[in-house]
Length: 357
Length: 282
Image (cartoon, rainbow over all chains, first blue to last red; front, side, top):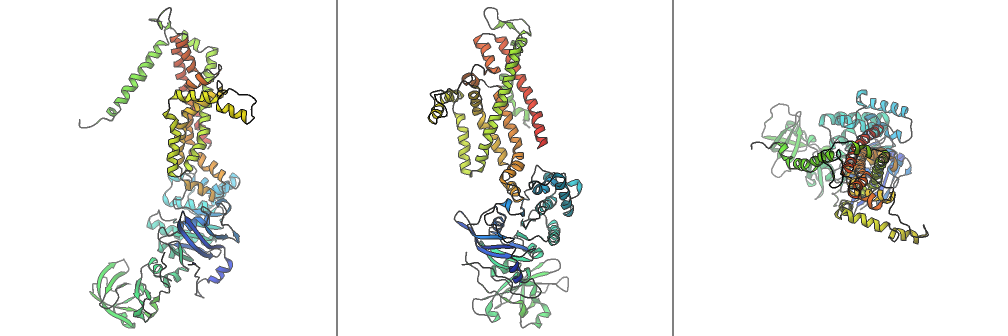
C-alpha cells in the first residue's frame, strides 16, 4: 500500500502545506530500507520546507532513526530517492551532504577538547587554526559553554554540556539540514525541558532546517513545526502538532500522542465500526456537563492527582468508560459519582483504520 | 583465616618469579664476574673481575648492541605495520567471522617455534615456493635464496610476535565507538581523514603497546637471526649462545646476557620518552 503524504488541510492560522510543498527543501520520495529481509522503512514520502522543524515520532523500532540515518547518508535506501536543497543526495556519502547530525550518545571525540570537537568540521575543510578557534568560541558562547570549559575533554563535561557541544559541533558547518537523534534522551527531565527550549530558540535564530527523532510526544509537541508519526516503518500522519493531536488519522496516532478515549462511533451517530476520539481534557465534568447534549452520570472508578489536574476514570452501565481530566474547584474532591459531558466539537471521528503491518 | 591477605594470592607466582627468575639472575650476575675457566669447568671459582664486561663492550660488542637495538626496532615496526591493517580488517568483520579470524591469527602459536622457523627457512630457500614464484613470474632469472638475510631474520621474528600485536591492536580498535567515525564523516571528513583524525589517534595506546612488545621480543631475538639470518645478522642473544656453547666462555656469555638485559631496559625507557612525545603531538 503506498504511504503517501497527508498534508495539512487547514488553511489560515497554521502554515499551509502548499507553500511547504512549493519550497520542498527536503524531499523524501517513496523511500524503503530493508535490513536483510526485514523491511525497516516502507515506501515512505514527505517533503519539508526550508527552516522547518520536523519531529519524527514513534515507538522504538518504528524505523524513525533508520530514516534519519538515510537522510544523513549513514545508510543507503533500498528504493526511493532523497533530495536536499534541490539536488538528489540518495547515494551521496555523509561527507558530501552538508548535514549536521547530533547522535543519541553525542559521539563526541574523546581525545579532543570541547573546542577542537566543535572546530572539527572546519578543520577538515582546511580552515586555518585561528579562524577555527574564533568560530568555535563564538558558537560555544552561543550554546552557553563557558571559556573555562572549552579546553576540557568530553569525559570532563556534564551530560548537558556534552549535548550543547554536540549541537555546536553540528551547527558550525552551517548544515543544510540538522539531524537530531533523540538528543535529550540521556538527560534528566528538568535539563531536558530547558535544553529543548534553547534548541528551539537556536533553531529559529539560525533558520536551520531540522529533523528530530524522538519517542517523547511531549517533546515533539513542544518544539516542532511539523510532526510525522511513524509505526512499523510507515509514516501514518504528517502535520502540524495541533493537527496531529486534534485530528489524528488513525487510532494509533491518537493513542501515541497523549491520552485518548476511543469510543464506538455509533454513540455519536456514525456508522457501525467507526471510532471516535475524545481527549480527556476536553471532557466536561460536574455541573457544566449539563450544558452538553451528550452527558450522563457515572461512577468514579479511579482518581489520579496530577498537581493542577485530576484524571478520573468514569464508569457507567451501557456507556463507554471515559477518562476525563479536569481542574477541581475544591482541593479535596472525593465525590463518588460525577456527571460527564462530551462537547460536540470534542468528538473527532477517526477517518482511517490502523494499517496492518 | 578470617581474611585472605591479597599478597597470599600472589604467592605461587612470586615463588616462581624468585625461584626461576631472580635466583638465576643473581647467579648470572655472579658468573659474569668470574675469570674464565683455565682448563676444565665453566669458570675459575673464587675470582672477581670486570674483564668480561670490558670485552663485551669493546668496539665489536658495541656494534652488536647497536645492531640488536636496531633489530628490535625493525621487528617492532614490521609487526605493527603488518598487524595494524590486519586488526582493522578483523574489526570490520561480523562477530562470527571475527572469532574465526582471531582463531586464525592465533593458530601459528600452536606450532612449535622451531617448526615455524624451519618452515620459513624452507619457504624462503632457493627451492622454496617464493623463489619458484619469482622465477615463474619473471621477476628473477634464476632461483634466489631469500633466507640467510636480514629480511628473513626480521620477517621470522615479526611473524612470531605478530599474533600478540594483532590482539593488542584489535582490543584497542574495538574499544573505539564506530559512531565516532560516522560523526567525523558527517562533519565533512573523508574516509581517510576520519581515520587519520579519529581512529588513528584513538588507537595510539594499542600501537604503543604492540610496538613495545615487538621491541622487547626483537631485541631478545635468537632463533630468527640464528637460523634465518646471514653471517652479519648477529644479535646479542646469538653472541651469548656462541660464547657459551661454541667457545665455552661462560663468564663472557653471562656478561653479554647482563648487558642485553640492561640494554632492553634502556630501550624501553627511550621508547616511553619517544611515545610520550608522539602522544603529546597527537
